[in-house]
Length: 103
Image 1 (tube, helix red, strand yellow):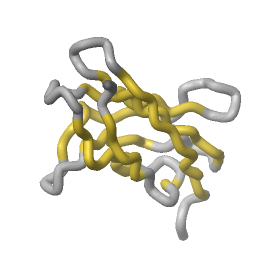
Image 2 (image 1 turned 180 degrees about the vertical axis):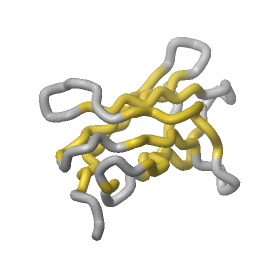
Image 3 (image 1 turned 180 degrees about the horizontal axis):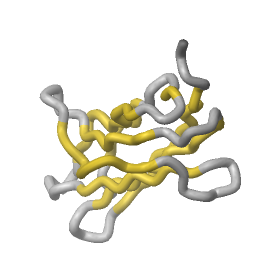
């Protein structure tokens, strides 16, 4: 059985700003360690923005990747692949709008 998790995307990220994008309740039915890989793509499938630093765990247990949004407002689809050491994996995804800078 593959690992499980609950994707908790932010409501939005402002252009050029950095925010954590997280997966909560990460578990593996076999008790294996789970690795997470985050990919951020525009509507054409191109990777956009920039991942900042390693995947890290919040005090509450959610696993996060800091993400610096691109410099233009757009829709970004976040794909998070959870993998265990036995070849089991699952990919979660959702859209995160990149909003114009707040004045």
